[in-house]
Length: 323
Image (cartoon, rainbow, N blue to C red):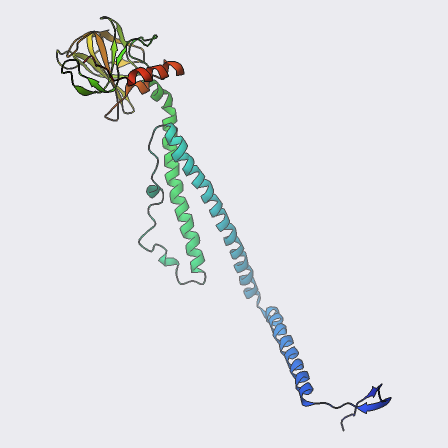
């Protein structure tokens, strides 16, 4: 027989019987069942962990350890990639510019990882995507490191040859011209002295008396030493290497021979009026990679900044050439 429960009613000053309705009973039963289910669920999880075999526990620890090391490895790969990217940027924009060589194209640095699925053998595992990504990142980094290593080897060789290269680049005027009064005609369109029409003048004319010394403007090897009554007359061509060639025309005579090595400042001949020339002068040209350049840009070794500005002004004047 169920016990009857009462409560004290302060309003009537008497005890009243507690009446239970079905709604409160169902609510209480539902709460108890939910509590039982939750306790059972969490208890099962803890119990199942407790029931893991030593081998399963070891595998779980190994998997957790591998996951941690993968995250660390990915972070180190990303950091190494950033360092390599900075080095590549310096290589292209600083080192190679300084040594006057072409930068390495981006396509060359990152070539070789498109098309065929080279990581197909890694598919079919629980962590295939993770393994494939790590493997690909390492392969890309390794390829870029090889390219950069070869580039730095080239830079080292260029550095070793830098002193020789600087000595070889044409960097002085071919005649003594301290007062800047011997520059008669510059590079560009000029009036031809014979035809009296505007023609492109591919060099600079230095006017001076016959017999005035002519000097090599950089270290090199004489590739031509020719005597003729036409064109440039008696002229010398010097190959300086690194794509640089200089030409000295209309000389009275030259004192060098083909294949002779010369150094900057060496005497190679004397000003004259041989070939197609209207007055004693030296016609001087500078070629870079088979292109005729404006020689005025190659006098930086024997002119002060003020003298160089003055030379630029004189060379830009459109007057009559001497050849």
